[in-house]
Amino acid sequence: MSEKNREGKRTARERLAEERERQKARDKQRRVILVSAAVVGVLALAAVGGLLAANAGDDDNKKETAGPVVAPKGASGDDKLAIPLGKDSAKSRLTVWEDFRCPACKQFEDGYSSTINELAAKGQLKAEYHLATLIDGNMGGSGSLHAANAAACAQDAGKFAPYHDELFKNQPPEPDDAFADNGKLIDLAGKVDGLVTDTFKKCVNDGEHNSWVAKSQEAFGKANLRGTPTVLLDGKDIFADQRNPVTPQKLKAMVEKANQ
Image 1 (cartoon, rainbow, N blue to C red):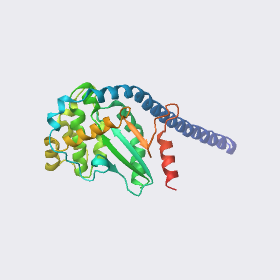
Image 2: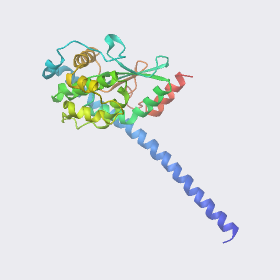
Image 3: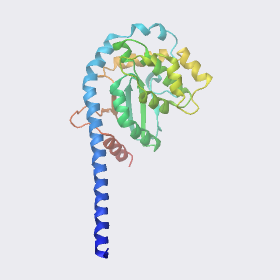
Image 4: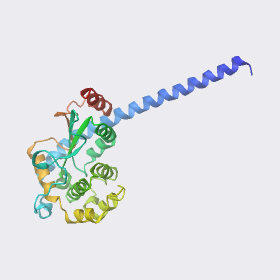
């Protein structure tokens, strides 16, 4: 084979490799757009369902939330109803209202959690998670309450973020109240290194933070928010403009710019 032919084949291979990389980049961008669009679309429906749930109340869980309000360790904000992630020195604040049974919340977490965790780890973003129980009120059951309590127990152990992510990764279908089973919640905690201890299991089984979760849900109702997830970056709803939502890439760029 002549040197010219070898060079031609090498160049062709390089062109093919470059085109593959460009296609990968286009595919990745398309997935991001689709995820953001899906979140916005689901949120439009969740706004109605969430408000119905907020108005429906949660009579079935009143007995479980009748005890004293015990906030998890490190909780912050008004009445200590927020679970913080990240450093106080971060220049950007992300406020997230979520329900562990909420499909739209899972859509949001699937698309944005890695970016949020990355920015928090860099000290550029402080996230504050508020837990709600809208789906319990709308669909019946107690999975939202029990999952939120378990997440608060994980916060006591300093492992809220990884357990929070595991709950969304393993979210059951909306009508399935699987998270009402404390045994399942403890099994999922086994996916987080060092979380399952006697203290954690007792906290979950005793519903130690149930009344705190109920107070958080009450605050959600009083805030007149449209549904879950509600996500505010420095006080502004990132999904307010459904034609131009804040994608994970835009979120990262906005936070990095604020921290310059």
